[in-house]
Image (cartoon, rainbow, N blue to C red; front, top):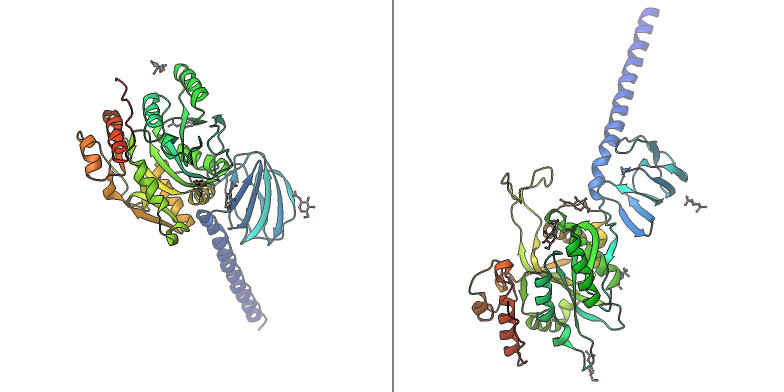
Amino acid sequence: MVRKHTRTKLYCVCQISVLILAVQGMVYFFFLDKPRLLKAGPRLEQGGTEVTYESLSPGLMLSGGGRLSVNLTQGRGKLVSLAPGQKRVERPQPLGPYEGPNQYYGKHSVKYQISAHKLEVEGANLHEFNYYMKPRGICDIQREVFLLIIIHSRPENFKNRNIIRKTWGSPEYFLVNGSRDSLVKTVFVLGLSLNNTIDARLDQENALYHDLIQEDYRDHYRNMTYKHMASFKWISQNCNNSKYVLKADDDVMADIFTVVRLLQHLPQAEKEKDFIMGAITTPSVYRKKNTQWYVTTEEYRDNTYQTYPMGLAYVTTTRAVNRMFRASLTTPFYWIDDVYVGILAAKVGGVNFRRINGKMALWFMGDIDKTFLKRGYYFAHLQSPGVHFTWTIFNRLLSREHVPSIKIPKK
Ligand SMILES: *[C@@H]1O[C@H](CO)[C@@H](O)[C@H](O)[C@H]1NC(C)=O
Ligand SMILES: *[C@@H]1O[C@H](CO)[C@@H](O)[C@H](O)[C@H]1NC(C)=O
Ligand SMILES: *[C@@H]1O[C@H](CO)[C@@H](O)[C@H](O)[C@H]1NC(C)=O
Ligand SMILES: *[C@@H]1O[C@H](CO)[C@@H](O)[C@H](O)[C@H]1NC(C)=O
Ligand SMILES: *[C@@H]1O[C@H](CO)[C@@H](O)[C@H](O)[C@H]1NC(C)=O
């Protein structure tokens, strides 16, 4: 009897242990699994070095060193010491204010306040470059800027910028009621050239026109997303008094008159909505190895992209730019910039894509000076062989608009 009783007890203990282990396993599985929710990303507000996370998904990963001060204002969480880059989750429990080295926190919908001197958040893409040059007299005015034209340029493309300044990017054709102020303003955004000769010329150029935005990332096609977010950041922080934004590359020709008229005559219902108008596409990911545009599955897992506007030119609202910039702060970097814009648009929602693919000449064709007006293009990608066509096409546009033509400089 005694022996049997002991055996039963042992059996029970065993069963309970197994149960406990199973529950523990589930708990660990449950919580260890959490970091995957990082994809959702925390909501992040940034102001100076103060960063606030609200309604945090469980499993926020902080790394990169620096010091943090944390205030858990709501919910429960567990603080776990970590070496930078390491990941670990433990059972949540109430958490008080914390100040110390960079740490990791986990728990459902908690509200943290974090001030950090240097902070890297997994899944985040804080755009923290310094300005070398900032424009002047563009949006620092009382009035609304109807259309802000932002041209993505390369430091060495002096010629392309000058052509745009004198043709379709000129404010001259949209002056407000005889004042010197225009409905349309143009700025150029570029990165660092790492070449003293070019830098010196850029300084001269900016002293003359005050229309360059330059931040301290290297200008490189792999850094295009930095450039795009540099535009979005500058617009969000300095050009909130603009209504629409036209993004274009510096080798693009635009029928700016038609585009402005189109925006001025948007149906009332459309005016309140955010949109992106351009060559809208949803292509497969380019997987051809050993090419410039090859994308690995580590870089982009799915085989199809989100819908996005092709980078040569698109028009959007300033409000959409604001919203997408904020979303970018918690959206992992992806190096193909127009694809990244599609990811942001999908994330913020409520941005309608307006296809004008048939109004865009995507590749340079030798007879573009003749076909541009005939086919009613809004935008043409002239590329380097064709930028000089801008002059002739623009003069044709002026003639259509009954505006005196401009003198075409000798090559
Ligand atoms: C945390 O919140 C408490 C109460 O609101 C406040 O007194 C304290 O200064 C905060 N600490 C930090 C590190 O923000
Ligand atoms: C131009 O002037 C007219 C008449 O003074 C005014 O009604 C109109 O709003 C002005 N246009 C702009 C764009 O300021
Ligand atoms: C810098 O740019 C100038 C002008 O484009 C070019 O002639 C020169 O070779 C460049 N220097 C270097 C080191 O790349
Ligand atoms: C992008 O810019 C960063 C910051 O200047 C630089 O460290 C990096 O090398 C650049 N990327 C490429 C591919 O040049
Ligand atoms: C810009 O204006 C919008 C709408 O008025 C506002 O929500 C947003 O916070 C402003 N952004 C900045 C950076 O001031």
